[in-house]
Amino acid sequence: MKRFVLAALAAITMSSAAYADTIKVGVVGPFSGPFALQGKNFKAGIDAYIATNGNKVGDNTVEIIYRDLPAADPAQSKALAQELVVKEKVQYLAGFYFTPDAMAVTPILKQANTPLVIMNAATSAIVTKSPLVVRTSFTTWQTSTPIAKVAHDAGVTKAISVVSDYGPGVDAENAFKAAFEKEGGQVVEAIRMPLSTNDFSPIMQRIKDSGAQGVFAFLPSGPTTLGFVKAYNENGLKSGGIKFFAPGDLTQESDLPALGEAALGIQTTFHYAVSHDSPENKAFVEAASKAIGNKAELSFPSVGAYDGMHVIYKMIEATGGKQDAAKAVEAVKGLSWVSPRGPVSIDQESRHITQNIYLREVTKAQDGTYFNKEIQTFEKQGDPGLSAAK
Ligand code: PHB
Image (cartoon, rainbow, N blue to C red):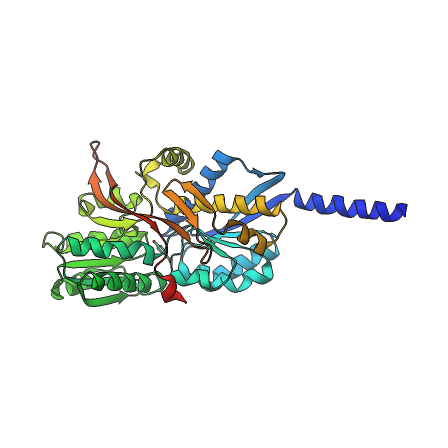
């Protein structure tokens, strides 16, 4: 009997030691290469969250383990995720900038008993690939739908759409077309470019030749978007009166110093502007600027990561640190809070974030810097792409 009690006690001590432990979170993102600034923003958001909330959830200590994935590379993404799960024993996977990288990881989640908290990848269908996916970023359906009304209200009846030819680009094209046609507009041509395109002059010529009064564009933020907006300016489309409409990926704040006047006046719709006027965002920008080292480098992946950490902390709290992916995800369904971007919640069914989408215009501040100025709010937007994704 005594021996039995001792054995039981030992088991309890061992298991509680296992629970009151270090909880590892594996974060995959582009931390080197052309998209390194986007990964740096993941890290800034995570650092800001930990600086503000501490690295403890109850008795458990949270440890972040980063893995670098410089470009969209699904095979490498899966290999990194497997290594994080098997060797590092992470309880949570998070980050993922590009859609194909997030998609590649969804098949391993169940067996790994690991939730995936997506901090950027924005194709609607990702959340349908596993019940263990939660997303705190946005979808291109969510951000590209409201800009169609803005374009039509600006007098554009014929538009051309230009997108990167992969998940979020195809979603953006479909979202814009559906909403623009509903307004009575017509998409005269829909161009899909390879993700690797970096010479945009031939595309600009096709836009001019199409006879459209406005262009709708989506490319993933980074050197791609910077090059595209520059080309729009340098090829005489802006001066020629062809209006430009896009989700906010095209005018991320970290691109604005390099774009300067080329971006001035461009209207975009998006879930987050660094300039968002709220006490929560003021505190966030202060902490994230400190983390990144230069406020001018701050951009939207930082807020996806910050809110992703909030969700992970709630999951750790709900499971008491025990690895139980299904319970962790269940606990955050319907969760609502005030993010630096505004009020948000995790949709019960889709596990995707419901949020305000803002119309913003690139504006010159008194000190000569450029920023996205919020001018209109589309409140509590769910993901209109989910029905298309099923
Ligand atoms: C994506 O690959 O899902 C993606 C990447 C960058 C963005 C938006 C979407 O700006």
